Length: 242
Image (cartoon, rainbow, N blue to C red; front, side, top):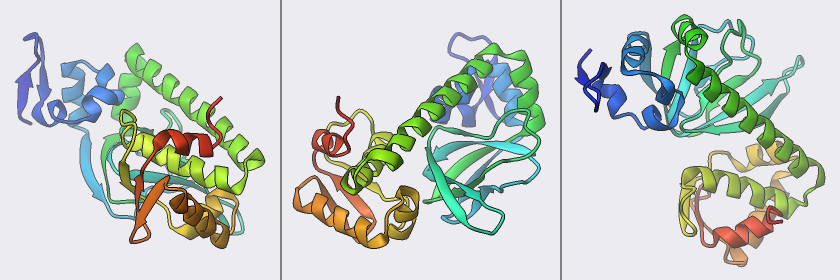
């Protein structure tokens, strides 16, 4: 594995890790160059097509994943086969729970995605010995808990318009949280999936998307390419401003 010296000349890190965006924004930022080198020997980058599983529900966990590109949807499958989307994850989110023997959710690529698959045993060893990794995972768990609570509010109390606007705002801010306007992204869910996610009919989703277009909050091309024209107005439409 080709490696380069760290900026301060201490230790080495794999070149592929030095050029990886998740190296500075994801779980790997808590690792020293030596630890990165160790983890990289047990990691593989993988391109995932839409619909392909990153992790199956109820499967024995042998690896975790860091999202490098794209969007991954989390789903829960009931005993009778019914399926519910329960969340979306974006780069550089971490997929998996250290020390868990079995996955409780299914993780499936919603768009073209790229992930870094890490050996469970290798990362579990690092988590046990590196407080920085434990802190990162704790923070991500807190963020996911807050997002889940916010989504409970969305599903339980918001209007159809607010629900659709909330989803668009969620995706747009994760695509480029530093931009104030003109964000553009591929909608990671079909109209049917959006309806299932939000507890709406597909007709209601389409109707609310049309209204948001008419209000000049968004533009939509080819049914999936969305352009946010005014992120602040979209935020207000989602009922997120206090």
